[in-house]
Length: 233
Image (cartoon, rainbow, N blue to C red; front, side, top):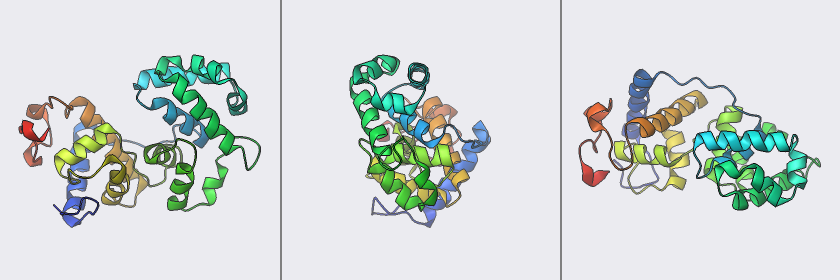
């Protein structure tokens, strides 16, 4: 393990590959396909913040039902948007954020659009997305990976927790730092990055819980430094 929380080494890269292989075997290899077009993915990810998946899906579906175009969402009253996304919670915060993002995306062409990402490098695309109002590294990475199949690693609470417990990243690495670090450790292939992301999320939800991880059933317990050690949970 390196003493520098932001740097990876060969041992960590090998460990990341070993974890991905073991979880692929346990849960099945995740198969990438585009979830939504980029603007849809961006709005969906904003709705997903601090919200369960089922409520995000309901909020997104209701938003699209009430406002069939993103121009209509951009121009709508924030209170009406908040009502449409009420299932997901925090509507009073997310509604103006979504409006501000859609307005920013309309500056170039007059309509919410992310087609300029096609001509950008991965790094430039991440920077551009994070320049939008209220868009952080996780949301930007979700758009690039889930919508466009580009090599960006979204780090949610499950990914961050499981990666630190396994020693893939140092325990001092913050969630924000982990986006670039875990992406580099997974390798340049976006399919591998996608697989590692999905694997870690599934494992965090099913076995490696925040408070009481089920180490007795864990397929990684044989090489997990935190297995059976509550002081490291």
